Length: 458
Ligand SMILES: [Zn+2]
Image 1 (cartoon, rainbow, N blue to C red):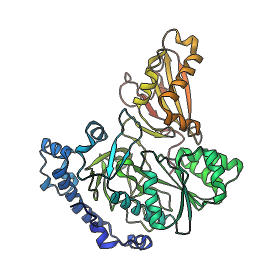
Image 2 (image 1 turned 135 degrees about the horizontal axis):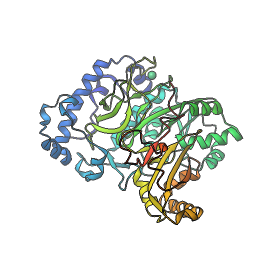
Image 3 (image 1 turned 180 degrees about the vertical axis):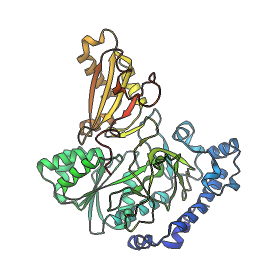
Image 4 (image 1 turned 30 degrees about the horizontal axis):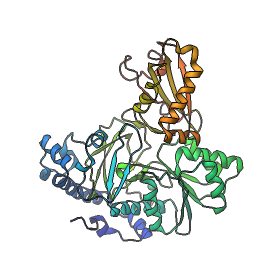
């Protein structure tokens, strides 16, 4: 049942040639895409109802008859959430034997595990190749990536994209930016595929010691302010493009085009919705997998706030809808130079230091190109006289608890600043981000880049 079956879209339009696929994409009409998506959506709903213990149980509890579901709206307020993926055994979502697995990074005590077949990994990489072609990548280009390959999908899917295009490719993996620069410089790679925060450190080195000519740099995993993008482009003399994705969607479900205005969505593999849009169209991005056989997800809430963009861009993928840059997260999980961070990380860290009082808050700021993680805390009586010792203990504890984040800190992907506030002031201070909701509840993690200088310019 789960052998390699070409999807309807592939049968109708697409061959194995990336240039042909990119050329044909220009003529695919949105109405046709939607009809095919809905046919595949119905298939996905029936598949999970037949094979996934989680969906069978949840559909029954919600009174949903999968045979009657024609459109996402027929599911009412039924969604799959990040909490579902953590709370339930991954096996309850799996509809066919998995061959590849990846994890999301540590925003809570338990990472989400997402499983695929090798064919699915290959196919997502293959679709990604069309987006790279659209950015100008050609078989003669020389590509290096600096992705962390541990448990993460980004590098693997990139490899499949580059195999499809036939580019020369080397894996730099996530080396220290200085070492990467030293070892990579002579190769004259003209395309770099890297993490946003890591790229800032590499660019500082290149600005000091000299950049080599690049065609473009593709960067993912966090938003980049337009000011930072302009600086990086000026140092390297090439365009910087951004991609959008989550491990749940196996990496890039959206990629910018030469217009650098929003991410074209991978509508061949996913059906996207914007949940509860405000008058400006901003709401939470929700996606359903269409072609997934191993671990399909129905109406998965991304927790990312964005909107569909209407104005034409004129590129090859112009009929693939675009979403705007991510404006923020639906909860307190923030993607930044440190990684994906959530209150849990800081509760574990600060909660283990007896001198730190219960009132603390972590703000992500971006005064310049690099994210600053500002830890605002109050100390318990007696702690005030030994601030330096408390801070030293906290830094040692941070390194011991979170080697992954400590490594990002040492690579210059973010700055960590500890600030002690007088007791009783944090909860009442304007800085504590009380704008939304009760003054009595202190938001633990606030993203001040969104309201500040790093707001995407338009
Ligand atoms: Zn475009």
